[in-house]
Image (tube, rainbow, N blue to C red; front, side):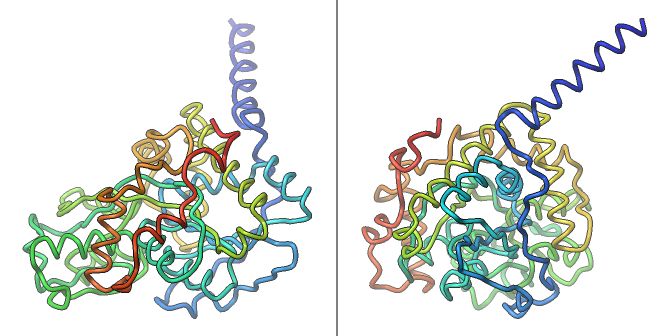
Amino acid sequence: MNKKIFIIGLMVCALFFCAIFIIPRIFNRNSLNHAPAPDTTGRNLTRYEGYTFHNDRRINFGIQPMWVPASAIIEVMKRDEELLASLKKYGYEIRWYDFSSGNDVNQFIKSGKLHGGIGGDMPALTLAAEMDIRIVSIIQYGACSIISRGLKSISNLEGKKIGYSRGSNAHFLLANSLSIMKIDLSKAGLVDMNVHEMPQKLMNGEIDAFSAWEPAPAIALKMDPGLTRTAKGYTLGFMYFSGSFFDAHAPLVREMALAQARAMKWMSAGIDNIHLSSRLALQAYENYTGSRSPLAVEDYSGLSKEDIIGIFRNPSIRPNMLLKNSSLHNEFKMLKDIGFIKKGAEWVDIQGKFIPGNEFMADAE
């Protein structure tokens, strides 16, 4: 009996070792090059004043530790030995910078301090309308939600205090939902705030509702299952770089995109891998916010499986996403209508900033 238990124990250890170190070569735990956490109590860019940026042979990249499953994918990418070796071959390394939203990431790309980052569809489209960028991969395909206490219809939001993060994909969900119900945005009490603060502020009665991406809705519903999901929409997230950096260093950008594809493949290989990436993402959340998420590893893993990890085999941008009257094109038109994109912007110009198909990631399955 003891011999059987010993053999089973060896098999479990072997499987765990293979999952972490062989599929693929990732989890170099000693090579993380991460900026220190910023002050997350403010809602303006001064919270990032402690960041230092160096452009000498370094990719400065903006990430979001409060975004499922993008944060889990990034945590795997950080530990991808193949990515680190490939960048080193070109004489480069990567520095990861935490941000609260894609809109914040965009401000630092526009200033030239970041070379690239990740953001939702609204941040990606608005930045593409403002400057030359290259959108190279999909990093999220999942839900945003409006969570409230007992407000069962969008029409009930008129005159209520609603938490949101300006310029985010959840901001678009809120604006679009109110527009459909012909509610003037100026008549909704919009309160710009950090996404990780929204669930607690709703609990405290400081706001009546909030619009956010996962995991904030799941956190709120775990804190109080009696809350109402007033609305739900599906959004995309992307990895993108400044046009000047892409033009000068396309091979480096390609290595980043391929690392994302490897991370997604590894996460999809088994539940143990998803759980491990979830643990890393939850730790990143705690490091950034200074507080533990109420979500368990299984909760986070479930959200990841419902998102891009359970939908796409690789993160290549699909050409049909860029067609006229696609969801992205309709969002672009809506953003023009509500003033987030200038009236003179043309869809054909935005299309040209996406890198579609597999020609950029020919080695990704």
